[in-house]
Length: 305
Ligand code: PSU
Ligand code: MN
Image (cartoon, rainbow, N blue to C red; front, side):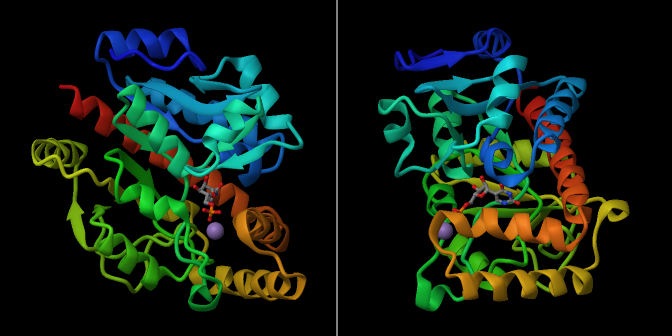
């Protein structure tokens, strides 16, 4: 295992797994600090870690706590992070700032990918990635997650792109960035709370073993771009697109009226949609993250066998 910077703390079980080349699944923490309310956020984080362990992999939740870059969190650290009121939301641009200023922060998909790759963790599970926001042609709001996927070779398992984004433009940017976008057992791009959409998926694979084999070839080619696995929410947990679209338009209108911009956009949307849907969106969100964690663990296990 390579030497990591002095500001990194690795949980014991993650360290053992790295030493023994056992399967590990990285997890992000913006979903905990900015994506879900307390206490659902900490319950979600715990059950996601349990799902990964049950599948034979070791979970490694990544976050910055008081300036320490954590790879794997103790129970106490997770509880603390889930209740911090003023946590930062950090990406490539500000991860070093959070560490040097001894802040506490949730790592976005982009920042989590950077840390996972630095530690040699190849698979990462999340809910949804950031993308091109609706109206990006005037706001230029395009998530740094997309450019990170273009240069950091980690397998990211997500439930597709949320309809709060401009999904066709998001797919175009992923293609430009050279990101391999693979649908797991699906021909259409999953739409986060909804299992399918009317957009064709660029590539399709139907097993964790095939995804691991695909990644091994990508490694040999040293492609230096990420692999995005789009995993549909289980049909029993999904919310139909017609219902979601109503909440999304309402939240979008409020956002425009209030002038919400920058980093606040995604958290604002998630919170308003949670309220408008009477908590239904959160239930679906938790179900899809768990589903992604299971697939990510299977891929990590297949990758190491
Ligand atoms: N999508 C969700 N929940 C989340 C996020 C996205 O359903 O919590 C978070 C992820 O951490 C993602 C980030 O990396 O939002 C993207 O933020 P932005 O759009 O500001 O780049
Ligand atoms: Mn943005």
